[in-house]
Amino acid sequence: MTIDAQLSAVGIVAADMAATLAFYRRLGLDIPADADTAPHAEVTLPGGLRLLFDTEDTVRSFHPGWSPVAGAGRIGLAFAVADAAAVDALYADLVGAGYHGELAPFDAFWGQRYATVQDPDGNGVDLFAPLPG
Image (cartoon, rainbow, N blue to C red; front, side, top):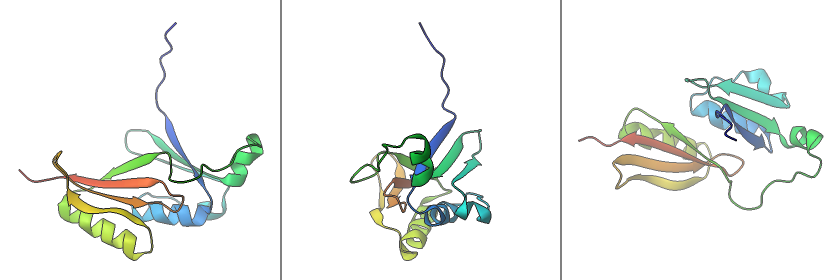
């Protein structure tokens, strides 16, 4: 039996909804300010994929035994930007705002300027752009 499934959403469980949403707003996502106090928020990305945010209490409301994974996050998100200078500038902005820089910008062997910053919940968020030529 083959079932045709289509990825529709990626969910992030936030320890502090306001802090998590502030991080993703700095990446350019249009998330309403009133979502900071909501138990659930979501944003539809170009192409229709949704990014969902739920508080820990929301997840526990339907999964009472749930607890956060210890250690580093288990998902990675990647945000494309215009060029190498934009990778450097966005990384500097996020780290300057107090977010943990996991990998400082570097020229990757696969032809991209690449960096990783952790969101407030420890998930790796990659920033990348193609290198010229």
